Image 1: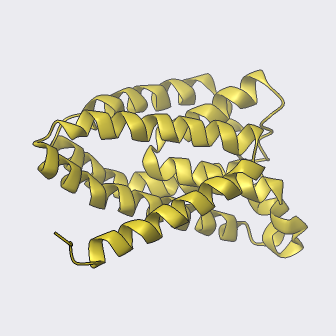
Image 2 (image 1 turned 90 degrees about the vertical axis):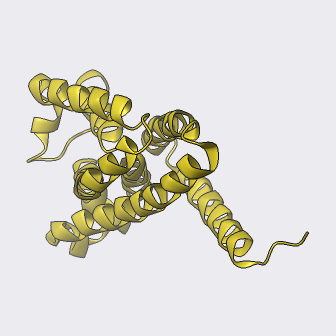
Length: 191
């Protein structure tokens, strides 16, 4: 069950920033026993791959801070973030260990699908909220929102790996916040 929470947490982080959880998983696989990459995912700990991911992260870090450019970047990331979510869910062996299910072990595509859907859901929320943040702040909120998202992606990635039980609390908190936000938007303003 903890491996599934790790996969869900990393996929959630990938929805905010595709490259941070990939980099965290790859670096930790090289320097610690916290991440053991399953067969077929050793490439994720290759230093050349990590260098490319770091360059992409740097580009994302800069582009996502600029109003309007962030929305173009989000459109491009609509394919990248879900793919990253699928990779990190599967690369952490979460799919193979999901509730110790032999079905999941025999159907690795299911882990990819869970990671893709999770990251896509978070990405859609993020990319929907960003234009609103830009419009309501005259663009001044873009760097702040982006920095919060990047910090959130890093924090969720580390929590998912080192304290996966907290992913349940995080996901519950996100659900409550989402419910509150939907109610707030749907209710007429009372002046």
